[in-house]
Length: 169
Image 1: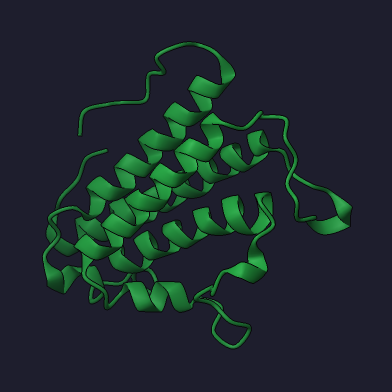
Image 2: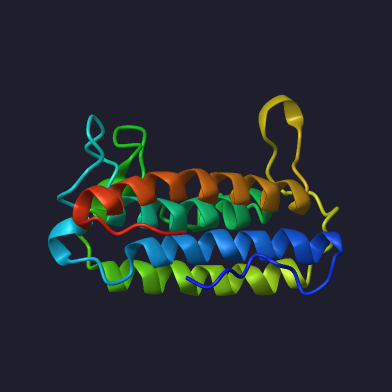
């Protein structure tokens, strides 16, 4: 993968969005061209939910939760894949879905959120309150998603190497 983590300008928005897009691209690249048998059948040892497909599904839904559920306050308008009884359902469903479909859904959501971020002030606060009545800013949501996606890229890296030996960004 060609490195794309250098922002076109050195302002805060460019830096945050470039790093998030780079992390998203790494996640997609880790799963691209993986053989079907590796999408859900090669979990991380000791963690049966950690699969290539499961993690891409998770990343897609995590972005939707933070941008739509928390920031825009649309949590009641969306049928979330997880429940109290099955909090990791998006990972379980991702393990059996076609990887091309999962990647396409993830990339489509990312494109939606790029437009939202471009049109919104970084200091704008979320509609939904988090613990202790705090409402994160868009800036915080972007930083959190960079952290979340990058952390899972480490999992994807290990999974892909275990599955077929592929390494890289």
